[in-house]
Image 1 (cartoon, rainbow, N blue to C red):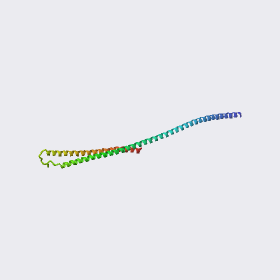
Image 2: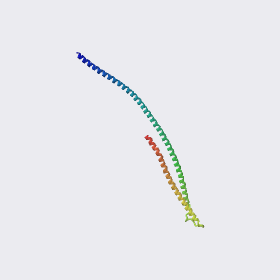
Image 3: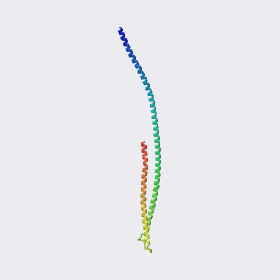
Image 4: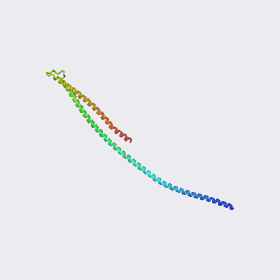
Length: 197
């Protein structure tokens, strides 16, 4: 019977040692878990602060970007309005200059036509060399012929000047038209840029 009691005591002692070891292991594990939880709380606080700072930085960056875009849009609108005003002024001045040029060319053409009509009238009124009676002085027919030839040469020169003036007027009209097209090209490109923007 004593042998059985000793065996029970040794078994109980073994159980006690095992229970104590498990208890100490549990305490150590609990301590480690609490320490790990404390570190995780500290890391969580740091991460929350970092996330808040990053969010504030993102909001500031969005605000700066929006203000920069608004500023660039205002500058672009102001530049486009200024260019539109300059283009309108240039078109008005070009139209005025074209009108003045047309008037001056028309005056020159009218003057040339009047001179041609005057020369033609003088030629038609001048007597033909064959119809001129033989005068007492033999040099008069030659002088009349020279006068008619001079009038004919002047008429030819006037007609040539009129043709040259017409050609120059046509060339100036063409260059003016091309200049208007070149001036209207920046307005169309700015309108396309504004539509895409």
